[in-house]
Each structure stands twice: as C-alpha cells, then as structure tokens.
Length: 213
Image (spheres, rainbow, N blue to C red):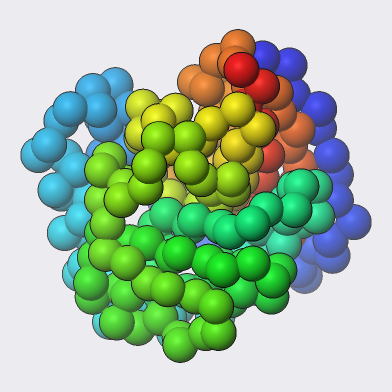
C-alpha cells in the first residue's frame, strides 16, 4: 500500500530520545514473535508480565520523556471526526489525556489492571481491562482505533473496524521504541483494503490508515 508521508511541524526536543536498546529489547523480540505467530499465547503472556512489572514506575518515567505522545497529537490532526474513540494499550494514560481533549467519548483499554490503576480519571473516558486479541466491541463498530507504543492484532482490527474505520498507530521514539513497527510495515500488514498517510512528530512517528473496503 502506498503511504503519503508528512513531516509535521512539531518541535524536536534538544535532548535526544532515551537509549532503550530497542533492537534487542525483550519487548521487541516478543513483538516479532507474536507478529510471526498471533496464536503464540505464551509470548502474549510474557508481554503482559513485562509491562505489569513496569507499571509502578511507568507514569513517572513517561513524564520525563519530552514529546512522549507527540505522534498521537500530530496524527489526530489528520483523522476524520469520530463519534467515539477506542485506545489499546493505554498504559497509565499518556495518550488518553490527548484523546480526551478531542471531544468524543473514549474507551481506553489495557490488558494490565496494574497499568489502568495508575491512569488519571478523565471526563468522557472509560477504562476497560481488555486483551487486544479479544476486544469487547461488535464487528465493524469502532470508528477510530488509536495506539501509542502498542502491540497489534491485525485480525481483531479487521473485525472491529468496518469500512471507513480509522487506525492511528503511533510510537514515541521511532526505531528507538522497543515496541516498534515502521509505518510502511503497518501499511503492508493491513493490506490492500486500506489507504494510509504517515508522518514524524517529536522523536516518534505515526500512521493513519482508513479502511476503504
């Protein structure tokens, strides 16, 4: 799928992004395993445990990262208005706060209750503990699905996003993000039933894909 590329006029912080050894990070290795085999339940469980262990420090660490959610802010500027928004892998709510400002109701989900317990109470936001492989939504019912540094299940995305549905997939640090999928790879994995545009913002990037059939 061809992707239109944008370079968003978002200021680049003077400080470099954190060095997370992303290419050999255990999250990156696990991500590649579940992309190769979405039915690898053991690796999905390992990912959940990894982020459960990080939950107590997650909010403080994320707050120290300049422009952590810049990709979400930039990508939302390109999205069509939606009646409601679903966020996957919301963690402790760094992107959720941006989504809540857009206006429509937000359902923010994460597989780890430990992450959700650290998320802020926000008007028009409902937090739900949910596995990205088994989302509690009807077929074709979600108008806009958003993720920052998430793990995808493209089969489930195909189920819950109908024609006209939008997927906004963002990372905080581009290739330096442990859970990283380049925008062009996301587009390829979605396939010919989608059209997409992408851009850079802060240290990260975003892709907005729209299902056309």
